[in-house]
Image (cartoon, rainbow, N blue to C red; front, side):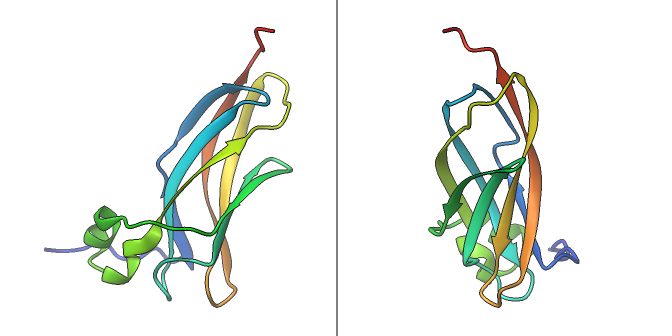
Amino acid sequence: MVHPTIPAERLFGYFDTRSIEARGLDRVRVAGWIASGRTGAPVSEVRLKLGNHELGVVRSFHARPDVAAHYGRKDLLRSGWQTLVDLPDLTPDEYELTAEGTDPEGISGAIGPALVRISKSTA
């Protein structure tokens, strides 16, 4: 079996949550995976950012056997992450959500973006 090569970026990954539709101040679930081409997984942390707003930090990672199998690297197993975040009070529009990871060597990189569509509040 031929496995895909690791991307040239030091950190690489993917948002499983590619699109979110919500209202400002809603709590939403965000998930994905991230790993380091050099050190594998888990990374030290993932910071979720929506524009200038930091939404949260993830430091707990779970198994993603699909990722390890896809790349043929057992050291990518603990690359999965998920969390609930509270959205800021934003005006209706589309925003980009990024996940900035830091590996154990202190190297940072971002994945994404995922799209967040904020609709009008019904209140």
